[in-house]
Amino acid sequence: MAGKESDAHAAVFFWGKQGGITRHMLFSEFEALLDGLVALPDYNDEDAKAAYVLISRSGKLKAIVFFQIYFDEEGRADSGWNIPVERLASISGKGPDLGGGPIRLSCRSQCAINWHQNDLWDPDMTPGSNDFIQVRKAVESNRLRLQFESEDDDVPMLQSVEPPVIEEVALDEDLDKNKRLKLARVLKEQRLRIRTLESYRETAATDSDREQRIIIHAYKNEIQSLNQTIEKLKLQNEKLLEKLSSRNEQFIDLQDKVSGQSRLVEELEEKLKTAKADERDQIERQKLDAELVLLREQLDRRDLDLAYRDEREEQLRAELDELKETQDASGSDQTILDKLKELEVVYTAYHPGVGHVTMTTTEIREYAKNPTAFVAAKCFVTEEQYQAWLEHFENPVCRHKSSSGGPCLAAIEKVSSPGDFELGVADRCARHKPEGFD
Image 1 (cartoon, helix red, strand yellow):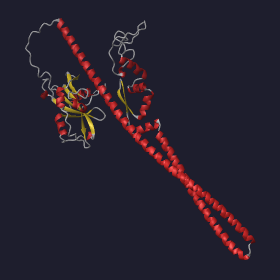
Image 2 (image 1 turned 180 degrees about the vertical axis):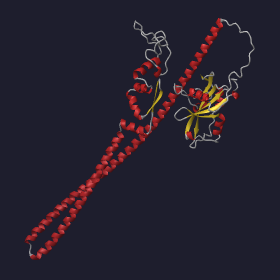
Image 3 (image 1 turned 90 degrees about the vertical axis):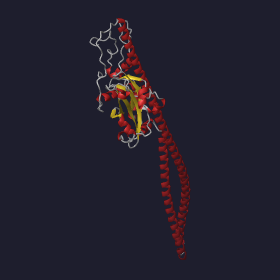
Image 4 (image 1 turned 180 degrees about the horizontal axis):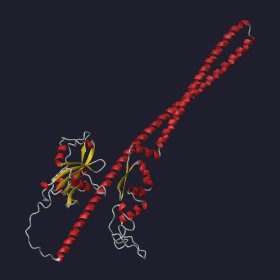
């Protein structure tokens, strides 16, 4: 039965934006989606993560193809999508054992058809968010109402015969063979996980580089714009200085005229005191004309004084704007961080025990001060406990010290999660564990 592909069930599972499988459908329903008969508004204008899953008649997973598909603004699938998921499911290499023997797996790190590699994605194998486990649970939940048969239905009846005599040596060989098979399977799963993590790291690095290039380009454009504004303000300031200099000369000339006219009025007043009757009318008219000219010049002086004051205010305002622009162009760490926060830039770092950690602009300051303490808090352990677990994770050996002071260093089982690590217990071999702990 294992070799009958036509007897298997084919399904497609979709992952949501926040992670986790959110939609189940038969492959026939997925084909209707490709034909444009239905739409998925949940995935408007985005690349959705999905998996083509082949399930045996007994409900065991046989093959998984992790692929991506784009949906337009109306939630309709890309009409040009042409990934041969059925073909990939039949020719792909082995993957992890999900309860029915090693599955056939196709993902970005393991793709039998090279030119479709970028159309696939690597599953997360981090404990607690393992995509393989999510697929297995989705199959076990059987929301698609698939009809499964008992594994014993296809087993032929055997005639009753006497059991053959098995040599003890043959049993030992079988045990050794089973151990070798299990070890090979574990090694293959670990290699797959390493390739997946490397692919995640490369993708994250590429995305980070692209985001940094976009940010740097935006800053360069902003600096160029600020420099142009500064040059414009400088030119405006120079023109205002020239204008003020001209106004100052006009003001001095007018002041001289006012002084001369004032002296003329004083001289006419003195003449009136000694003038004859027939001369007084003419002198008074000259005096009135001189006073009128004086008043006009004083008024012009007042207007010029007001204009000078307005232009001086305008010059000071331009100098202030120029100073502000210069300060903004020079920038500071706080200004850059605030700008990155406005752009909603996120930061990603990888640490054992927690995987890829995404941080906001606010969290990056805390991370930069003490990365170990930050990651320990994400793992819900103390910094000392995380540091001790990290030493154990990188070198899982017994750390019990004998009376001579030397450590035991016997190989022990690795604890994959900091929260499950207990100092003095998990880092001890069976011979040196405290009493009461297996």
